[in-house]
Image 1 (tube, rainbow, N blue to C red):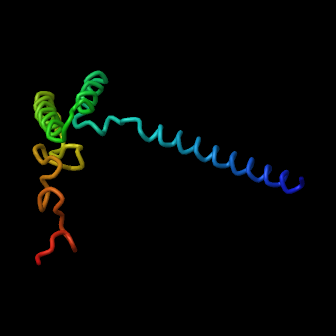
Image 2 (image 1 turned 90 degrees about the horizontal axis):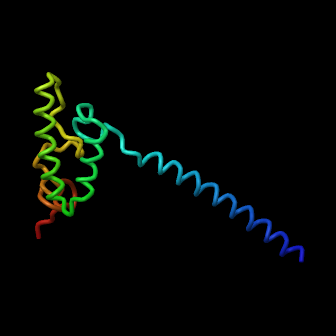
Length: 123
């Protein structure tokens, strides 16, 4: 009987600890997932509706190639808007520092290539 009571207390304590950690992690993750303006190239030149529309369009894209095309068109549009407003935007788009047209899989070594030990072995 005493063991059952002790086991129950230990299990309850572990459960509440795990629940607390899970809740804290969920809150932190949710706060971290809020898209910031800096994630959209030229966002400082866009209103909230334009940013939301761009994100929706990117989310609706079915392939990486389609996202690259949307990104490239957006990049050109923002560069033109910046020019009209006399503002300078950085040359790199927010897609991990890629220039337009450098979509996924077109980096050094081609798709899945890479540079470094073991990237490609010649037998």
